Amino acid sequence: MTPVIETYCHLRNNRIFRDGKLLFESPDTNLKDFLKSAYKFLNPGYAKFYKMDELSKLGFLAAEVLSPAFDKELRPEETGVILSNTHSTWVTDLRHQQTISDTENFFPSPAIFVYTLPNIMTGEISIRHRFRGENAFFIFEKFNPELITDYINRLIMSKKIKACLGGYVDRSTDGYDVFVYYLRSGKNSTQKPKHTAAGMWKLYEII
Amino acid sequence: MEELIEQLKQQIIEQLNLEDLEPEDIDPEEPLFGNGLGLDSIDALELIVLLEKQYGIKIENPKDGQKIFFSVKSMAEFITEHKK
Image (cartoon, rainbow over all chains, first blue to last red; front, side, top):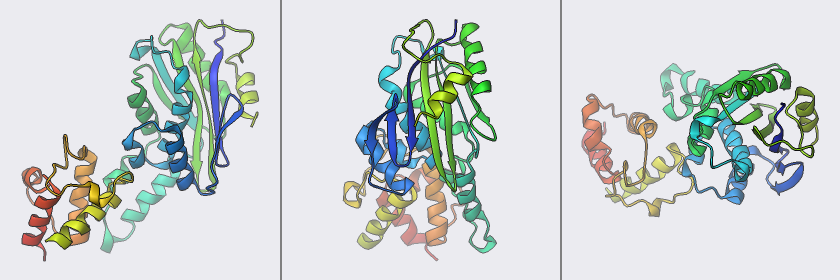
């Protein structure tokens, strides 16, 4: 039986949408200020947020938006995090490269370097919400729901997980694009979108 | 020493991205790790880089780190003793 999506969110153009409805809009046009004001709006009380790179902040905020729907009755290993993007940690990689490009002023920053892997973002989300199920990050040329939906549905069918955060969190020098959803197996509803590739394309493009 | 302590507080906030803190929130004698500011191992590495980048001081023996980075005051004392 194909799982259904409990809830989903988009972060685009300085706005946060949950289930297709506007949740928060920031007057700030640059990403740094948007992330800060969105954090203050959601108020998770998690100071480590400030130390994260922009990619992790985007993923963290998306998970916060969806977190009221997380099933607290599940054991930590029953929730997975399967995310993807196109530009990996490109913006942070550039920042790191700047710290090492001048041999006369060679001071690589550990705090920047540690975020030069995209699965650090899935780790940050997992630590925050105590998820210890399957954890994976994929890099595609563009949003690719075919592989993600198949991967997550197989994990659920094989009973390795019962719930999962899935989707796409991308940050490039041109901007950002976030579409993340939460699904829980065994909760079927004709009202909620099914976790299929076609269904995820539709939700991805809804905003 | 007071001036150096205030400068260090500002540098620590900037280097470690402690954006929710103001310099006056940091007690110079409060432990930086553990129950104090709650810094972690990555922050410890950043503090080592800060000493080298801003003050030209290299920590030769990593075991000294625990004493040097105990608090902002201990960092200031170490910088005063070792600044080139």
